[in-house]
Image (cartoon, rainbow, N blue to C red; front, side):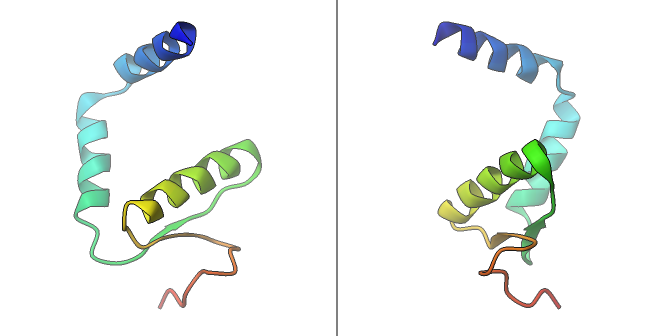
Length: 72
């Protein structure tokens, strides 16, 4: 388990701090729907992330889901 956390810490250190802030600000200040599109392993990861955002109360959806509302 500690190995997994050390890997996650290393990934976190390698990310640009201003890019992380911009990304989180974009999600927190989103006034519309958050729509994801991905394929393969990245698609599965993105789908899990969209589901977590949805659990947190954000209007997050994946292209291809039957629950995807009209985007506009």
